[in-house]
Amino acid sequence: MSMAGNLRKVTSLGRVGGLRRVARLARRRPRVDLSHPARSPLGSSVVNCVSYRDGARVPGGGDLVDTVERVRKHGDGFVWLGLHEPTDQEFAGIAELFELHPLAVEDAIEAHQRPKLERYDETLFAVFKTVCYVEHEELTATSEVVNTGEIMVFVGEDFVITVRHGMHGSLGPLREELEADALQLAKGPAAVLHAIADHVVDDYLNVTDAVQADIDQVETDVFSQDGARTDPGRIYQLKRELLELKRAVVPLARPIEELSTRPIRVVSSEIQAYFRDVSDHLLRAKEQIAAFDELLNSILQAHLAQVTVAQNEDMRKITAWAAIVAVPTMVCGVYGMNFEHMPELHWTFGYPMVLGVISVACLVLYRGFRRSGWL
Image 1 (cartoon, rainbow, N blue to C red):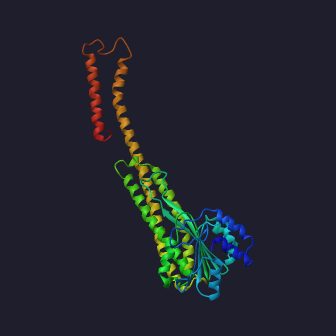
Image 2 (cartoon, helix red, strand yellow; image 1 turned 60 degrees about the horizontal axis):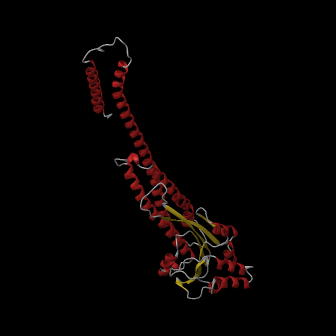
Image 3 (spheres, rainbow, N blue to C red; image 1 turned 120 degrees about the vertical axis):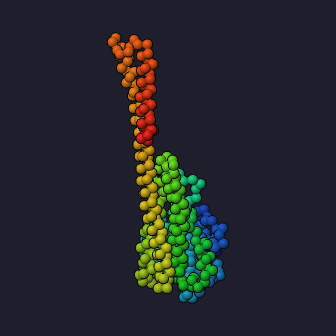
């Protein structure tokens, strides 16, 4: 059944009013890419809706209301509903069906949230920042290195709702991996939450490894023979992109710590052990980012020092040549004053002598500056 059919059924149950208009809005929106085999065409914002029991996928249609009712009737298993950038109208029926808190719903729709973990009655709401590395042939002062998105997760006793924002971070492959591990998936919605957190943090590590290659290239360029000519905008761009990565990684430490240490009803102690492993990986990503930040500061300081040294060398060369040019300027200035009584003014060899003195003085100065490294 289509998403419009799902929404009409919720209306017939008397849980949400005015959802026929929502269905019409959903049909007008561009559809999400459903080419991945783990996705099912349920609507413009719904990517997939599947129920699981004992770690196995329960066969059946895509009717959201029927799926939820079957799970709650049997009293075991859970529903995993995946959405991509839903509007508030499209999410209204779902929020009512699963009794989601309005504040969490608002955060899930608006996006642009910091990583966090909040508890609303029996529902857990988590926000993860997803990151991906943007491939580029050559790093420039305007290159985009890190692209970010968001995944919001609602976790209850018998449901998981994932809301994804951004063009990357698809959960289709993750769903397939979980479905291949029935023992892990049988542990319930908390196992899905752990898999998402682990997937997000693993992406952090992959991005930091890719960023390290860019930093190594910049470092090599700065300490090369022409390091002073390196564009400092590349270093600033890397620091800016690293800050974007830091905003995604650092705030997640506290939510992961809560999931791994504090008692939470929907997260069993068995799953908390898995979150401790995620916490270790997150700590590694944080340490790498901190090290990169310090390294970029050092590279920038070294580049500025190289520029200063190069400028000093240029000034010494200019000063040396100015001193050499000052000799003929002084001599010619003296003999250009047109006095009647000047030494050797009427001597036949006066002119060659003056040129010889100028040449010898300039040669002595040149050799002296060369020995001292000024030229």
